[in-house]
Image (tube, rainbow, N blue to C red; front, top):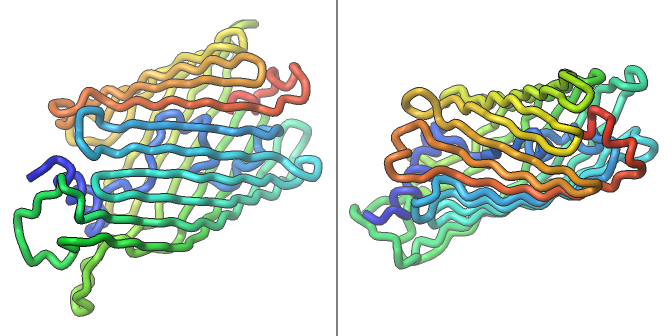
Length: 316
């Protein structure tokens, strides 16, 4: 059986049992929070474009590959926020597109603290190309496989989130896609065994701890929960040097042993432009077949004044 077909079974077949992570996974989550929480729109107090590319499990044919472009900005004196995200993910013979529009409403607590409530609507496309020549069918008669064709699915959804900022601390809770959506194939209406997209619940948190005039400590957390699936979380600790260079280390729970991965992160900010990169070293059994995952990020900020870089929100 070809590797690409194996991956299709893993990510589509196991999804039928609601056991696999179905949303995109990002190591640089602290710089890409709009992808999981609509309340983040406008939270940094400036407009920002973010471009991200992720190649997961290098060495596997048909392994997950993600491309994402987003924009978010505050509006009406920072009372509301607006965000747009377009993402493409390929896994084996599956090609997925997702377009999201986010809105947030900001309630100021004081000059440095606020709570934002977010709402988003999304449209998602799933395409499965069973005619791909790399696919080798070992068992005939599987109703979840179109042996000589393609399958297209379009689904709509909505999500909600809350994002709290208390000076140098942030906390977010979100559900990006509320309703389950069918993404598998099974013409047998008497059997309820079709892969479905399940609701994912996210919690994010982070803070800035001054160490010296030119150094800050930046811990961050991303916790993910899916019903009937193992709990997953990313624990990150980064150092910011001279408000310009950030270096960090993350540990990702999960996998089948001591964790899923150890991740190295770096971000360089010069004026309006930030360039980030991450490398995930696998800790699970997949390390025997993969040399890890890579992720690169490019962000452009519409900074009004140089002094905006000193605002703690700038680093989230």
